[in-house]
Image: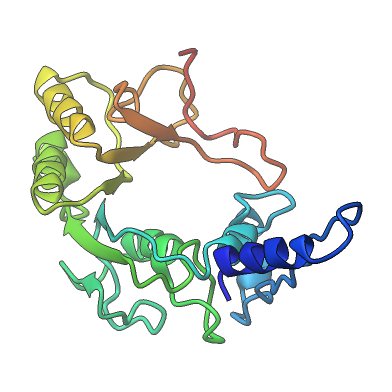
Length: 231
């Protein structure tokens, strides 16, 4: 029974009884249970009382058909044999990558499978993940140009969300043009603020088309090592 059927029935019933009596439907709401993944209870950022309200979102969007979204993760690859990441929608770019595996977990770890952690997407079939490996360990030789080429490739591949976990201390007009173009194509760009205990701007998080993400504590205060700047 859908929402329209319910209110049609209410209207018909209302027309047949005393008009001084108002009839309203009483909904029975089924909530998601806590995921059975061993570490799920430790993921304070997912919980509704002090996190991103993921549990509430799972309930509200459980029966809805959401638009398909491709997520590009610019990182150091991921562990392709990890049991929480063996999903048909994943397009592996490279074997290995501890940090890339961690980021992938947060986005799309298989959830409620009694293994490891739960993820914000909770087994959504509408999300495809693709990794763009920046050859972790060769940063000094590649600079930001390698990262930016991967961002451009992710945009070309149709990614609508791109996450970047690298940062550097200089502005580039060429980089700015790439980010602005992606932004104008409705791509959500996310970058780490950095972990140098610094107070000066870091890029790409500093660009106005990019969402800067810092580290927080479980009390939702800024972590002391997270970079921050006035604007």
